[in-house]
Image 1 (tube, rainbow, N blue to C red):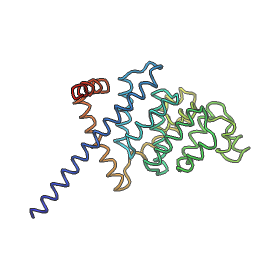
Image 2: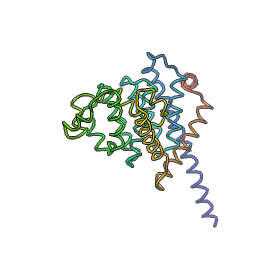
Image 3: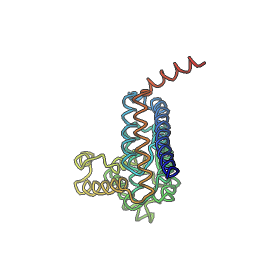
Image 4: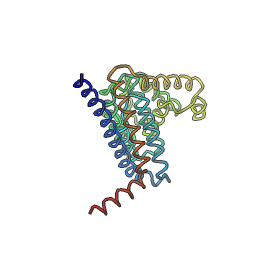
Length: 270
């Protein structure tokens, strides 16, 4: 009996320390990303509070979904480096994750898609090579395509005629219509952050707004609903790590306070 109790205690301690270690790693990832993002968004007038709020939004999203905050944090630096503003970067990461959830893609697949999309956005438009990467990741499903085509129609692109001419949506990309801005708008729709009223204000018809809103809600639900034991473990660990990361930020401080704190310790030790 004593041996069994000891085993349970050891397992409990291991789970607790794993959460603490994960929280510290998440906290340090956030601090490192903050510096990168700050350098990229300085020209748009964003400061430490804006960056911290953006990362907190992604962290909250990660806790509610099957996706990983550390990967999101790593990729938002690439999006801002590609020239996307902070709000667009957050919305694109969330929208692409929801699109991945819509077709049942896992966190690893979403991370690869974030990287490829950041490269395409840096180039200014999507080429066939970029689209193939999304197809390989199984993200370029019918819902994903529908949002992109509706964005194109709203902007006056004769996308239906192009598809008829070239035989598929992927082959229309040679026309250069899928710009980084249009893709970012499509991802903002899929993020679920836009209301129907906001969509009509952007120029969509009421019929388009209804269809896009319904599709966005379906994508959000796909991302937040846990569908397997493995996903349950992953979302629970993510929430535990995030809780500890918030604790470390409370104790040590945000980016500027942490930098001063560790610098003083370094000077004393040296």
